[in-house]
Image 1 (cartoon, rainbow, N blue to C red):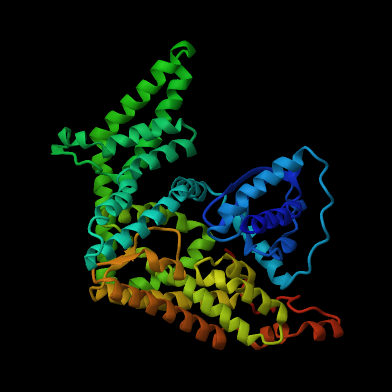
Image 2 (image 1 turned 180 degrees about the horizontal axis):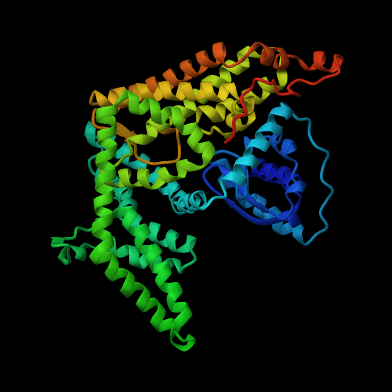
Length: 502
């Protein structure tokens, strides 16, 4: 039955993206089906959003359909199979569009996303996107190993199943001990080199024998430099490989190019990059600890309040290597639970919008369908379908995130330090990944308190300050009244609504 449901979702999506001939590539990440398109104009955005199982759409370098964790991994193979089957046949006519809800808000969200996409095409943001492409494929393994590590910690603390604990420790730690190799592989793949050569150079960093190597007067330690060193080493390997491809004769290429790539990049890695990257990684860890120990509530307020705008600008991708470095060093990233509070503020703001617009069935339907995903940390449907197009509720959502971040940051300052053993999930989905120095009881309670604070402050600020009188007069209109008066709800943006962009 589950297979039938996934196939039905894929079958509903395919004609609404222009059919098989309009598709150039298919991939998926943790929550989104990513499709390359020949003709963007053939996509029926609003009809897609009405498909059961579709949580929203996002436009970036690919067209992304938000299906949620778990579902996307099952729908994507069905979608690929349908495309392969129908390419050889005459495509059927696309069905008539489904009725849409909150259409004007969706149009505004799409316009904001399109404008931001154009602004994001800068060298710095394109580079950050490539960095994200290196680490995002690693997230499923980080999540799986993180949850196993948490389970292992509980068993060890309670003294249960002592024979199983070492086995779980091996499962949880094996991937992290070799994460540098995977980073090197993905880096070479992303920057146009041979992936296995990138992995080979990065593997030098985790080889136990590097302890016999001395650089800058000090013996190296296996793993020194971590993921940052692996990224730099593999990037250097790509440059060396490309240079070799230009100058080495074809007859010798298969022997000379791999050898020189590993040799030259390996020497630079051992006698330079490992030491330098190790110093940077150590500095990142110390800076994160100091930030929360000294800044506490203020640091949490700033981080929680600014994270949604960072997401809108695409700058949050710069945090992925930092999270990974912190996980590699201490077993968890202290930053993610604070940043997750931005999603709590967004949920609180959406609930307030729901209650402030009791007569607008269109927007309320959109909120009801998007809230479950919002509680689980998938914020795109609420951001692009509700708060960002409305303007003021986006600002009040940030205020809620700031309050939740300040709550969590304060307890970090007071000595209850905790974090997430993996990146990717947030909201309620982050609970199984929490870990800290003060025990799971305190850790879970503080994180839950932060979420509750974000919900309440996001709700209160949006309810009382998220709308002006002209906005309410324009938006709080039921469909029947709108039709009778010759206008539809949410058709004109009030003049004093802030023009916010991603």
